[in-house]
Image (cartoon, rainbow, N blue to C red; front, side, top):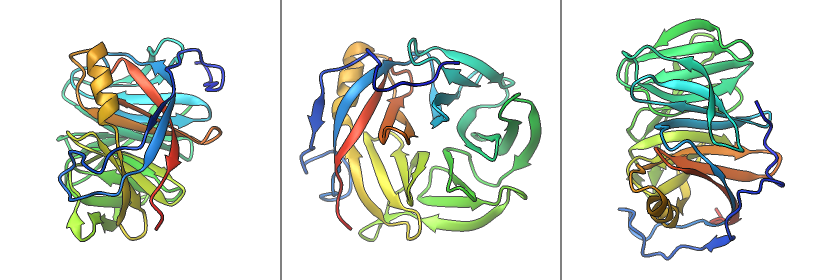
Length: 264
């Protein structure tokens, strides 16, 4: 398992500054857009149906769905995973997060989650929930889970039951289809399923502060792989203050620097 050294990776793309037009495809009227720059790219397994992505202690962890869903540690030089957990085919894997030396994993419609030891990947326990499982992250205390609606559930890590709900809105309009999640400094970044946007959500109020429009990256990706599916996968690299994004069946992970954010 190799550590990420983003500063010396050679899988670079000419830096792309992206300050998107207000005339984007998002259904909400005139959304506030966050500008960014693509610093570089890394290879990604184009057979991986990505459901979760995160960076923990310099390593990229990924989870996938569909048949033989897996959790693995990704080699940044090849994009290939060292698969640590492969689910039984009856489970469709979804989001993952790491907290307190444990990996938490959701499944889609089976309404069952799994908890593994971070070092050994031994299954420690299962837990149940009432809605579908989509994305998963944490705020250092509670797990934060999406189910495809505009509601995020906060789960206590001891009981793994819901202790709080957060409804996500933008200027009074519900923002639904929330998918893969990443918590960063008081905000939850969320993929919007089947859209090219990532929402930046205030973790206290649920109000969306702005959107990353990554439609340019989706377009470029499909030139490389016409079979590439939707944008999905957000990971924060704390030491470099970079946002890693990818998608289902994408051949690349894009390393982004945020260059402008709506002031709230």
